[in-house]
Image (cartoon, rainbow over all chains, first blue to last red; front, side):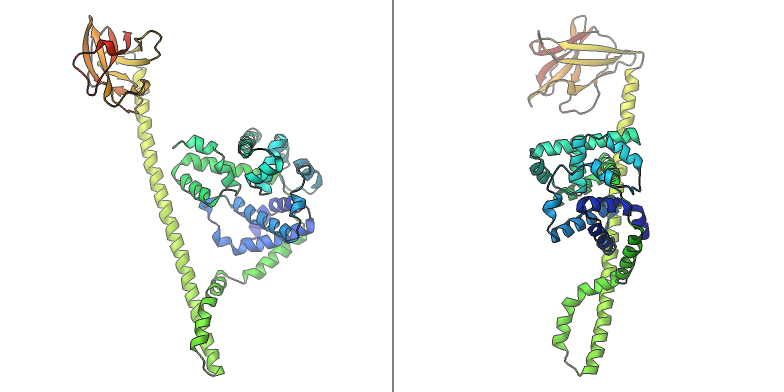
Length: 159
Length: 278
């Protein structure tokens, strides 16, 4: 468990912070999430996917549940303007990892980054994204696919 | 199956992001075992998204580490055995209450024995479940492995056959004869590779337009204006190159006509589709 915490803790904590925008709440969420991870560890099946994906799903759900409980869901999903990597980066002086990754990702098209963030980090479904950005569902799927292609190209060139 | 299309559909990204529906998840889990390309694309999508998530990393406050690990430690007292016991208790306890009404001291003993047997049962159930799951996983892996091995062998065979075809095509005694449409403005074309040493004639049958079920193409070789049967062209062939059953050592031209199923001994000249001089 310590290994998991040390290896993935910073990444997961950063994501929880992004979702909750509240450090105290993020710390509670991380604590509860790690207890859940321990309890559900037998359910992890490596043949079904990467460990980080499984951890992220638990942590993300924990954070969203916490927000629902304190009725702040609308607040975090409210404005598109505050959803940007630059804001996150600017607020994180204690960045622990991979400035290199950040630099590389900085070159991603901002719309692509926004879509990836909503679907992967914030856990929005495609219909929810379509509604939020007021674009057709088919366009959401196409753009996310392009975003992934760009992400692949970015990592292909940068790493 | 159109694997490229499936990969391009974006379903793997949904799966990697944990956003796929239950049905989609089952589908991806199944297909990734069958098609290595899908497994690779999925692993790539997961790795990319994990790297993307890395850009959000933020250093956890050092004091939180000990707090979290202490909490986990506290909960870790609840071993999987205990958790399994808890899940069994509610179903068993009411039966015990109804069927046993002894004096208090005996009741304690009964409860102790009951609890011990519940633990035993739970442990058994837990072990059995774990064991069954492991066996299922091993069986699935074996099946998947065996499927992958079969596929690899088939691909290697296919690859060897294609290599042989390519090597054949570049031999110095190969002559390429291009057959063009016999109709003015027609677009039909077919290339015939003729080995002038062995007399073997090869071509790609799928290059010709499809025919009704009662018709079939037939290949002819012409020498001094006299046509000779080179055999019918197989219908619905996926082979990259088909070798004519008849070999020919001399010829001035090759031609293809449309004939009734099974072919004819002499060509129907009004049904000429393509022709090319050597």
